[in-house]
Image 1: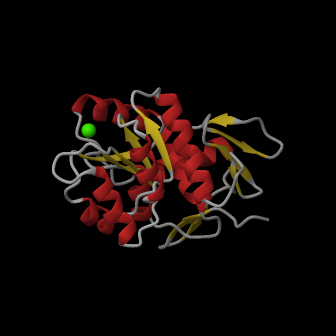
Image 2: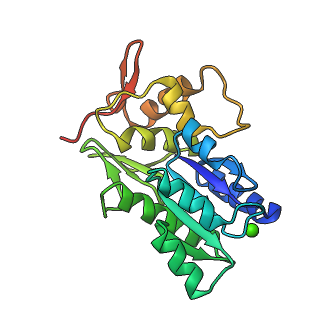
Length: 221
Ligand code: CA
């Protein structure tokens, strides 16, 4: 999953970026509210983390611009502003959740998973298609009748992308977009390498290749 982080504080931004990468998210980081609309128009993001105290445009204005443009991307406000007015403006302005600084990274990650579940239309914590089940909190994947296996960060990110839309074919560039952020080096055969690793761990039938088009997991059975 790919996350857009909008945060002007370098220390906080670096800490969040590192924690998100450790949790296998691809992260793009903007240091101000400038360019948010263009960035969201150019790239698919699964979630936006928005600070309110930003140089230039205030976070509330950035939020209003995103929602005003009809973009329903899951969005979590992270801010030191704890006034009731700020919280209400954020939530009424279209934020899906609101987290006060300072926070524990574990709580940020859990709230992100909760927002993503709700936006995905499911209250269940596990992703699955009837063949394989994936736990976003632990990165364990399980095929029925086999013991669960731990996936690497990028194996997890790839399988998660496929399980978000069982039956849909994702091309190499679709998958790269969801696994890698700005500045990440992408080897030309990285996706094939990850697929190979996943098939070795989970069995070759879990991910299907459609020649020349991409890969998919079976639709829920
Ligand atoms: Ca700030």
